[in-house]
Each structure stands twice: as C-alpha cells, then as structure tokens.
Image 1 (spheres, rainbow, N blue to C red):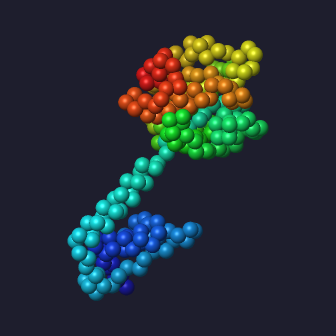
Image 2: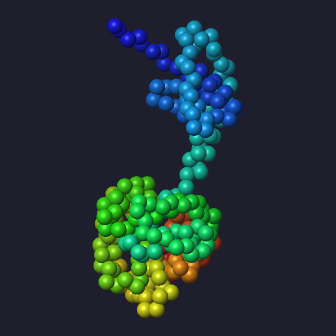
Image 3: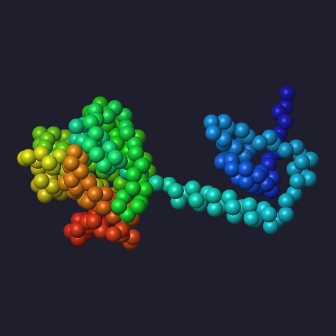
Length: 266
C-alpha cells in the first residue's frame, strides 16, 4: 500500500500557532516533523496538522506575520543571552574540589566525601557574571570520563593539593592530559593551590615554577593560593575568574593585582 504524502505546514500557519502558544504562556519548540510542540510541566502536546482546506483558508496579514517573527526572534535571542558560562573543575581526588564548590555556594565549610560522578552548582563572580561550576570526580578510575565534561567549556579550573608533594607529578600529568582535549584549545586555565592553611604547604610561587612547561604554556593561565576550609583567597580567585570570563576588552572592578591581571589576560 502506497503511503500518503504529507503536506508541509505553511509558514503563515506556523507563525499563527506560535503566536497563540506564546500568548497562552506555553513554551514552544519545533520538532523534526515540522510541528509546533507545546511544553507544559511534564507533558508534551503537539498541535495537529491542518487539512489542505484549512491551509488554504487560514491566511494571515503580512504585518501580523512580520510582528510574530519579531516576537519569536526576541524570544530566541533572550534565551541565548541567558546561557551561563561553563566552568569545569578538575583535579586529583582529595584535592578539596567539593569542599571548594560548597564553600563558594554557601560561604561555609561543609563535610564532603570523594565525588563519584560530578556535582554542579550555579554561581556568580564578584562582577555579577553567572556561571555553572562542574565539580568532576578525580579518582584514577574516573579520570577516563573527564573528556565527556569538557565540551563547550569556557574556563578550566584545576585544583592542586599544596600539601601533597608526592602526588604533584601525577596531578601535573592529569592536567596535561586534560589540556590535550580539542575542546580546550586556547581555553583559559585557573589553577588553585588549595590547603594553604596547612603548615608546610607549598607556596603558589613554588608551584608556579613547576608549571612553566607543557601544554599549559599554550593557554592564558593564572595560579592562586586558597583555602577551601577557611575561605582564604576564594574571593580573589573569583575575581580572576571574572577577568578570564569577560576577557581583556571588558574588565570588571578589579579584585586582582596588576601582575595577576597581566598573567590572566595573557
């Protein structure tokens, strides 16, 4: 039996139904079958296709169609402006990534356990720039999944344990492997030397000397000392993150010294 050919939905009817959907408060999306899908809470409903007679009879004025196109364009552009920057936080296990994440979110230290998978929170820089921070588990068995989190990354945040000098070569090797991902080409890197409150921790200057090599040299990068436990240096680190997100042309009110800004902006 020969399958009946479906008639495409004319543009004027699509605009008409999109306008009705928008006026009723529905969120709309265009499916692969050229039907306007209306999304309401957990249900999805698609408007039925009109008959050939309905397509010929329902013709809208050109002015209304143009106005509806403008309205839909504003809706799409508004959605694009709301897209938050994506910051991915990597590092070895026990480096303090999750403690750092929840200190930034709640301004207090929280007891955490090693992350299996990831944690994610929406945050803001001191400049008011919104971003999503992804905290990815750093156990050796989980590092093979790191590339799956690096697509569309705006900033790579890598956390180093300043007290664990024995695993520092392993941390630098993990950083090199992450920077080898094609999605991170030219992406700025913010390195945080965590646990600075512990006596005997490596100073950021000492760590910085060991970082002057490898793929990191092909990226704008900043190294800052901090303590996720006490909150020391975290606001300054967020200031650097704001500088990196905005770029050299649009700088926020600086919480960063001139030397760090020069290094941040390359």
